Image (cartoon, rainbow, N blue to C red; front, side, top):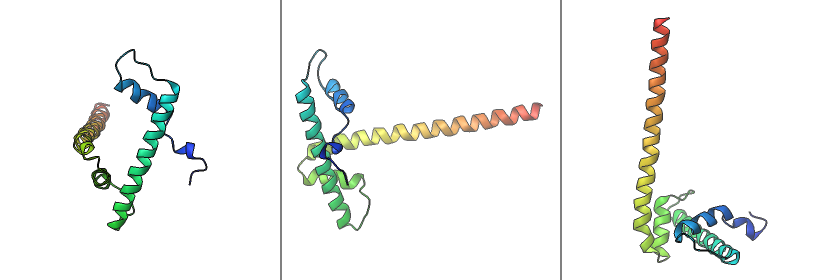
Length: 121
């Protein structure tokens, strides 16, 4: 368990980057506003995690998964988040799959090159 509630806050650098990406160039956000956004985001994540955990336990699962999170969003009346998150999750999974395939190809190519070098020597 955490010793202080502040330990549950999201990192300030992450919050600052998200705010910067969401606002137009040149827009400024006060330190107090950033702190408030960070706390609100942390509370949202904790609330969503708690609801997801409850849903997972109802299914006798010890680990929450994507379905639990998406179902929790629906239960918490954040249905509008589900479709964009699902779309982004598919993109993320494709990127990870492509990276793995690229890595396997590079390993295979390196192994083939090493075998060809050994055969020439």
